Length: 254
Image (cartoon, rainbow, N blue to C red; front, side, top):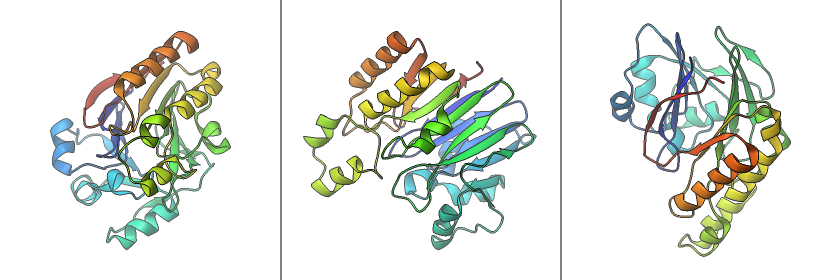
């Protein structure tokens, strides 16, 4: 059985941990080590694989102590590794992945795909297990062909639904920040996320989780309506992650 643990999803920090019988697969460590350890007690008999999407602080804030404490296998893009090295993080033993190639690990396959965001070389990830595929696509300015290729056919998808257009446009962000969020290398709006789901739901999607939701430019009340729409119109399970609200032990098996 594969379980998903979400420490946080959003600008305050991002960290997802999938747990199988023999392995922890961690996507980003954007929180302090003490919070990670408070949330989950890692079984020393299980290996840890860490995948990094990009180098922004809310995705790598806790990486140094995490590396020192757990000595995980680390996988990321060359561009992200270069940026981390410039921040004083040793990347000597990192595994550098090429986008659009499938890598066979001991218990699963991983397919990194390019996303449009203002990092050096950001990735989304698709993890293929025996009878289950899980896609992670957050921090992206638009849903490209690469993103659609990465998440189409997944039984479970974690997808960004960052902002509602009117709330962002009329909100308190300064103009340059609004422009950045809405750009092709910024974040994904609710409507763009819904459009992406409309393109993949008939290809085997069973569970959808909306994440990286802005608490300044979005509304959980609105998100609940989008979730309900997905349930009613696409006949899938759907839910969302609140920032800084941990979720533990979600069963992902189809």
